[in-house]
Length: 208
Ligand code: FES
Image 1 (spheres, helix red, strand yellow):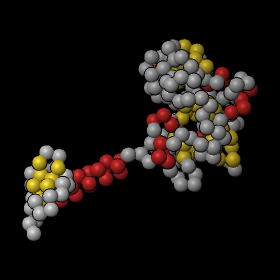
Image 2 (cartoon, protein in one colour):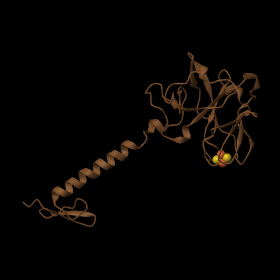
Image 3 (spheres, rainbow, N blue to C red):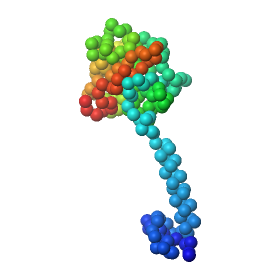
Image 4 (cartoon, rainbow, N blue to C red):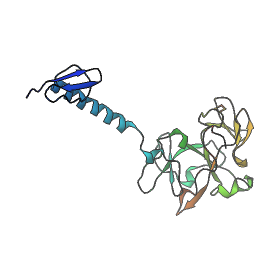
């Protein structure tokens, strides 16, 4: 029986049994090598893809970790969020699996601490000891909201200058953003900053 496989176009024809298996003009050995290499490449590509767990939106019970800086990946404690200063960027963490949900940029969160009495009625129920969390993805064109207007104490998006008031459920106070940032309810459990419920509203520039 011949071990030669002739491949034309997208199919390989085994001259011995006429079966078609795949794609180039080469020997069976070469074809197998290509198939193995292709499989390895596809496996590598799949390995680079974020897992469903890492892409899942923040869920009740998640903890929070620093998204950047020297402490990137370490868990955020309530005392790490200082009163009235620039937001801290964070990712949710599944405490059971220790998976950081950074597989989707839409999961990025910002945290600020404000005087609890300064929070309005739409914000206070979702804050924990004055700490409020919002989606960090701007509702205009999905840039990360990383700026802080110190005088006005507002969250600032550098892309087109939208500003959000973190005391008023991230109401838009300047710029083209069409809607507030979704708030992420928080609570403190055994001293740990913890997600109390999923985002209230859709993240990114999708409507509602
Ligand atoms: S993306 Fe934030 S203002 Fe345009």
